[in-house]
Length: 93
Image (cartoon, rainbow, N blue to C red; front, side, top):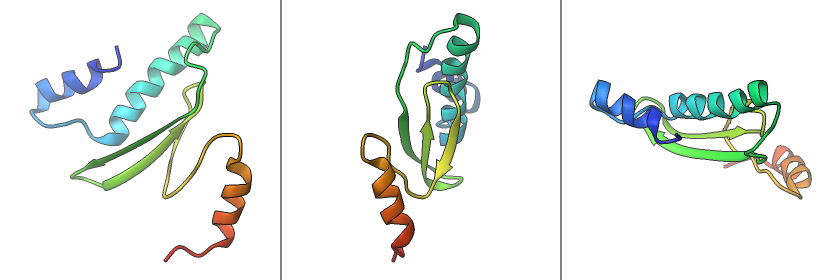
């Protein structure tokens, strides 16, 4: 269950789960289906955005196999390559 890691953390530590820890837990679930089931039932890349008191605002991306990475800015979808190239050549203010 996707809500289980955050509920268990809240019960144990009496505070919300840190963003990266939640993303790790969700991607572990995605990866387990890939490794043990031989399937990718989720079949999508996801962007996770959140805020916690330790690191502030955060952005993570995961693929269908459960791999994830953190970003300052990113995009996914059909036209993500041209946008990513444009973003790389543009200086963020």
